[in-house]
Image (cartoon, rainbow, N blue to C red; front, side, top):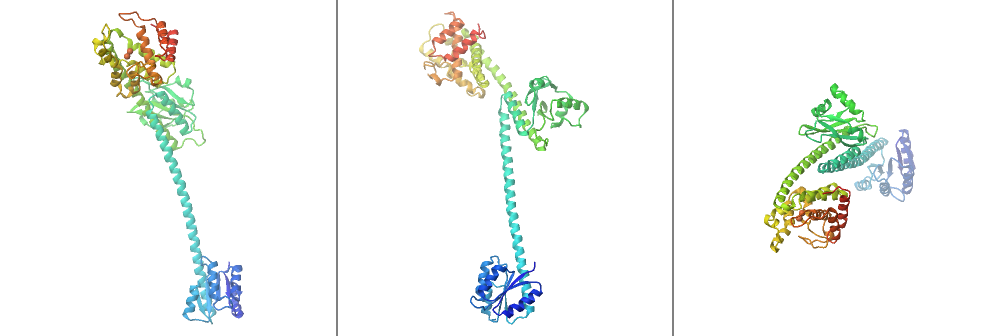
Length: 512
Ligand SMILES: [Fe+2]
Ligand SMILES: [Fe+2]
């Protein structure tokens, strides 16, 4: 569209001449004849340029120019002032008021046209620049929004990684392999969004087959009947590649392919070998993705990561139970040493351990608590290692000093085992197996709830065995009589525990 020009002069002839010649050159024009008229027309016409006479009736050109600058914030509309007055002060005044140029009357048309063109093109360039600037600013704003979005995604990723890391840490920490497999399966299902997962594992190092250990979204009964030989083609392929295998992959030998086909019939798409120290210990199979897109490379990486954590966890749990067995056999040796010293109590420790463990199971304690009770009971008299043989075997009454030595055996016992990490929980049971509910026990004189349930169970099992054992000076009670004795002493023994013991005796699970 052509540029529009507002011509302001109190001489109508000037306005007319200028207007005609500008129109002839394609400009649109509007005329105004005094200051107020000029501002009204300016507002209506919104010109691209103003030619403004300095001397106007009423508001003069300088004041009009000031007003225009107030309306035209970006200084987009050039003002060319014309005046018969050419003294430098007037020129300065006009430029100060915001005029772009100044022309002296009388002016040549050529001169004024040249100034109009250059002012307009300057104004256009300025406007262009400003618009480009705005676009840039806008892009910058959007860029910032992008930056915020990316940052947010990154934060979420870091958060995901962190929770995954914590989860894998948990997998490493879990000592109970059943619990580990349960957590592992749920993690795979949730993190990958798949319908099934199954883990096959070599339970015993000497075994040649991997057996089904657990999973989710699969039929336990069906998979329990499936075994994978450590030496079959698929296992060898997995051990060799040490990486994920697409069960539909063709790039494997025929024998491995047949085995892969067989296992994929259970609905599995991929598998991953669990390898520790170059040995294949297990294989994890995963089923179909629940979304339509199938597995992404991210999914496969994640799958490998969770599997690796599980492999470490499983190996730790195996080492842990091997270590426990070693400890337990050491303990058994220690215990037989005690019993060798105390001729009258041969077999006592084994029986107390058996009774206490049965009671703990019957009461429905957790696996871990049952284990603690079992260790605590097996070790309850280990402190007798520190009691002189002649005191232990003394046929008559003990004197006060001797009695003090004997009474100290729970403390000595607790001190012996307290630094063995896996016996930490059992320490309390060893120290407190002679405490009684009414506070009459030793070494700490604990009362009621101050005595842990584990210690109360060992106390009942220990006293029950003492009551039912024959001594040189007396015949032991029958099992039923011993239960009655314990019930009569409900101020000392936990009646609830005694009742569970009674159940075990009545059902024949504890017998002579
Ligand atoms: Fe004892
Ligand atoms: Fe004992």
